[in-house]
Length: 285
Length: 273
Ligand SMILES: Nc1ncnc2c1ncn2[C@@H]1O[C@H](COP(=O)(O)OP(=O)(O)OP(=O)(O)O)[C@@H](O)[C@H]1O
Ligand SMILES: [Mg+2]
Image (cartoon, rainbow over all chains, first blue to last red; front, side, top):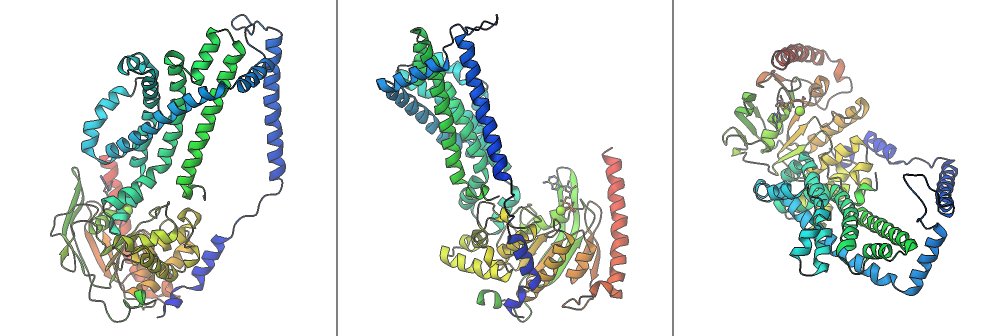
């Protein structure tokens, strides 16, 4: 029997049927536009209510808008801050700290996670102390970190690191544990050694979960850094926000808050984008 | 395609699978007891039995995923000590590497054997052609239908030239239509490569259609209950299901399996209620 006959017509029919894609649904564009409009209106309404509450010095008893600057003032302060050139050093300080803490957390979290998930010995040796430290919020480390690190810079990076480490570590362990054992079995049957299994099966298999851990870790890194900067910092957006409060520059508080939010969001997007590039097979589903 | 064709032709001399007095327990739970089976080179054997009787466990033992005593399982006289490329495995589902393209999945085996990337890819292309999926070489598995994924799985196992092909309900998740096509095509491939096949299924029709011999396992702990040689013409005619020999074999299997399934059911009710 010849090879070409081994492919029956029926086989090919199956192949073509599954290969054809679905056409775009008409009306999809209109729906998207409508959703976008509703969202824009919602944001506008939110800012409008804020403006109204601040301008009218709204008092509700348990909460008061007397000291809350209006969006217009915040916007003016923001422009002034950008013009003054003081924003860049604050931004730079925070970004360097976050990426230092997050970067070290990513490397150690992934390596520790792989070791703990794959080796019983590593689990027995490494996991118990981590398990003890895990429930302690990173922010609770601040006083001790200030004592432990001679430089304030070191203590802030350490807090950021502590905050980012556990989500990355736990998601790595979880991701490795979730790798389908049939994939590992298949690889072994195909002749793969431990190195190929680690790099071509375990790590790609755990990658989606690791990326999730990195994204969560990036969020906690910002959260922890801002807190640390408020207490121990010189420069940095957290420090700037707190300083604005002590100096009674109330609009600048909100400028600081919004900058922190924007930075957090931008770095999450960055992590997810990088994660998507590293796991291209997931986008084609 | 020389790589494939060179295996065809006269009766193969390799792929003799011997399972001798195999017993496996998980904890205190004996799953397999005194299981014995010899599969001749190039023979197609289907393993049938009630759900939970240990069919997958036997297959995993042969594949080397479940540790067994050194003398119990051997291929061509060599005892099975762990997974090896002489035994290719095809699972029911989800065993392609989702992060590798179809081509990379099939090329994985040759690369692990030390073939250069280029050589591995060209071998993979040969076998994708063999299962009719060369056009899908650059797709990720998730973008293929279940039947197509299983054909990639078969190509990935075959590219390593295993002397024994192990298949654990490979078509179990497919619709009846696709399953029929897959069975037909598996027999075509098998006639070409003539590897020994140990095929697990719980579909009696499938077993009778494919196999030279059907082995029925007992309720747990699993052992061989019946060895039934299937005397049907090859290649199978289109009306094979209507042949009296088919009906007779089917009735025999059905009675036995129903009886064993009832025993599993009773056993579970006694022990787990
Ligand atoms: N790793 C394991 N640990 C403990 N028990 C197991 C393990 N694998 C299988 N078993 C038990 O062994 C028995 C046989 O399982 P097995 O999967 O081999 O059955 P099967 O015949 O393939 O069933 P099915 O037809 O449903 O696939 C079951 O009772 C199952 O619970
Ligand atoms: Mg099974």
